[in-house]
Amino acid sequence: MPRILITNDDGIYSKGLLAAVEAVRDIGEVYVVAPLFQRSASGRAMTLHRPLRARLVDVPGAEIAYGLDGMPVDCVVFALARFTHFDLAISGINLGENLSTEITVSGTASAAIETSTHGIPSIAISLEVDWGKALSEGEGIDFSVASHFLRRIARAVLEKGLPEGVDMLNVNIPNDATPETEIKVTRLARRRYRPTIEERIDPRGYPYYWIVGRKCEKFEPGTDAYTLKVERKVSVTPINIDMTAGVDFEKIGDILLDDT
Image 1 (cartoon, rainbow, N blue to C red):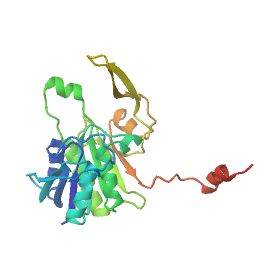
Image 2: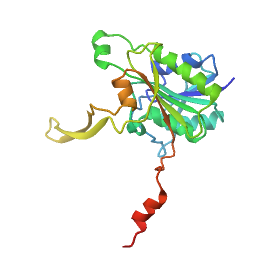
Image 3: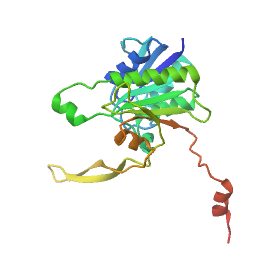
Image 4: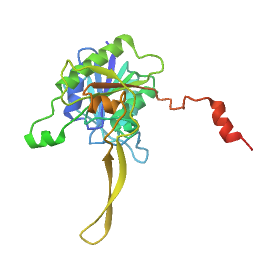
C-alpha cells in the first residue's frame, strides 16, 4: 500500500488532522508527524536554535504518530529522516481557509511546499469556518464534507499522479459545501489581507503593537478566493514551487545590463 504522511499547523490533537487520517486510512499506510501545539502562520520557519523533542501520540488509523515541539516544516524534516519515503503528503485539514499568494505565510501550505521540494506529491487542504456561527451556536466544526473531498482528491493523485509542472495542490472547501459541490481548478488571488499595525497602550502607559489584516473584498474571477467566497465552490489550485518568473530573460537583461 502507498505510504501517506499527514501533518498540519493546528497541532496533532486537532480534529481536522483526525478527519484527514480517517479520510485516507484505508487507501494507504498513514504516518503522522504534527506539531504538539498550534503553529498557524508559521510559514516555512524551521527550528535551528534548539533541539527538538518528539512524543508518541495515539492517533486512531495511523501506523505511528509523533507530536513534535516544533514547526510544521520541522515535522516534515523529522518524518523524512525517520521514515525515508512517502507516496503522498497531506497537510490539514486546516481550520480556516488558506487562499491567495499569502499561502506562503500558512503553516499548512508551507508543510506541503516542503514535502513537494522532496518530490512527494502533496495536498494542502483547508476548511472555511464561520467562526461567529460556530461560537454562538456552540457547535463543533463538521469535517465530514472536507474529508470526502480529501479522500477523492488523494485517491486521484495516488492513482494518476500530478501533471508535469505541478508540485502540490492547495484545496479550500466552503463551509456550506456538500459532497455534490463542484470542484473548480483555480489560480491564486493576489492577496486576501492588507496587513497593518495597531498601536495600543498598556495599563502602565507603554505602547504595544498588534499585526492586523484588512480583508480585501473584491477578487478576480478564476482565483481561489473568488471561487470559494463568491461562487461557493471547492477551489483546487495547482502550485509549482519554482517561483522563477515566466518571462523572457533577455528583457530582464535589457533592464539590468543596459548602460545607456
